[in-house]
Image (cartoon, rainbow, N blue to C red; front, side):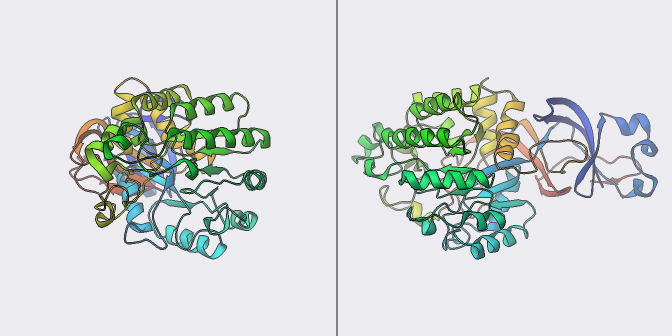
Length: 448
């Protein structure tokens, strides 16, 4: 048993905010008690007689306790590219960032377009201490020509469907995919960039492209695809998620589509609500990603979309690459940055501390909202529910200097950030613990 004392509970599902003690047993939350229940009532009132001497107690000293974070857009590069990341190192990075559930993208090698690959990934995921889910591909081989056996993949446990990294250009194919996914109660998530309009990916066709003397990726590449696909999804009444939104126009298109349908969703990455194309000029390939960092007006529009509910969730698009790959010329280096270990801190710094979101609203967008879209048993804290929790100090600072991920491709290296994750608890077990966590003993109960 695990007894969390003196934590400040933030549960967006119930609206609970306040100091609580939490008792955990068998991977479930057994009781949520008023702060100090142990002292006030005595162990005989809190614990069953046979368990009183086997309870591990953690004094959280006022730190925030929230549902374990949920990231529905990560790349663990397994199978095919495990020199960048694998399921085990990706899980370690997730746990260090406070995430207890992640959904893997399906652009692996082989692609997740068949049951054998999907089963292999899910089996590896069960070897990790967190919850690993995986999407399957929309089309066979990510080629955009023929749909996968979505029914079979759904039966085998696919959390959703995506060809992330490659847009779905065939409108009829998208309509069919949305219909079949809707029947399976699974979302379709789309990478929205029209390659016909892009000369150099990962670089905004504006100030950044001019600085490097290249063509770049124009905002119209995203806008045109978002506009087309939202119209189709509204008509089909199917769950569609616009991935890593980057332009103010796309935010507005999602806002309008949500007025017509309750099936429209959007995600934003921490780097898109934090950085602009200026970061690419400063950091080079470490700030190259698809879609690219754009202008200050776009960044502010994404924040407003998060604030007013247009953008439902925050997802990292954790995209590891090797040092050698990122050391290539800008036009040759792969796009993407890692994000699991900095996401919560960036949310606190850029959204909460600057007054755009409350802490509860941030937690909702990083746990409850993505869990609901993907129908995961996560994102809430209640008696009888899963003991998946993150404990963090929103005021304590840390320096970004090392990672649990295999990769180090981050433009935030060297920055001081607020929000230290002290514990990540998954299925009632501590799967990550920060160094120098100050724990106190409760008389008669084992020290944590």
